[in-house]
Image (cartoon, rainbow, N blue to C red; front, side, top):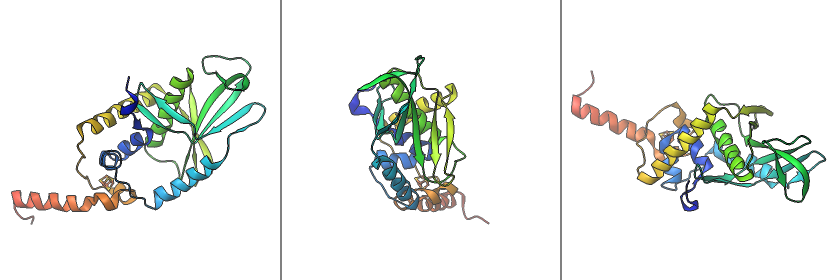
Length: 221
Ligand code: SF4
């Protein structure tokens, strides 16, 4: 169990999986450099979050809910949590203030772009589900990632493996924050899409490393 003062942002998990140095620059050194990808991503979030919560007969849509989990020591804001009315309540259902009946929460996260080849978005959504489970005392089996470029939802099942990866990642981010040590840059293809590129300057470190190796082992042929 973590104290509230020690909570890390849910987004830190995603940043850590993308690159531990990026996570440290943003969450440890508090640097933030907006590139095109994050700016357009933020505009999409703003559009989603600007809408008020709404209710129809069997669905209630809540936007910008504050989420937290003392078990993982994380907090953040949801894009959307949909609540579906259930006539046969089970462990997946909860009560809602000023609403009759039982409701099943279903988190939805909005993303710019298209489906990725890694699990960064799935971990972020799973972290939101773990928060909702703790806050509402329910079990959540699945949620959705909506990708702007594809204009469609992609369902995510919160498997034991994904929950484990989410828990391990949050522990690693807490360790990173506690030891207060920013990892060295490791230049790779993903640096070109990194919001911290201008702050990190990975090629500088890369060149420095090559220069250092040349100094030790002599000139390359
Ligand atoms: S530029 Fe590359 S090494 Fe630097 S933080 Fe971004 S992904 Fe990591």
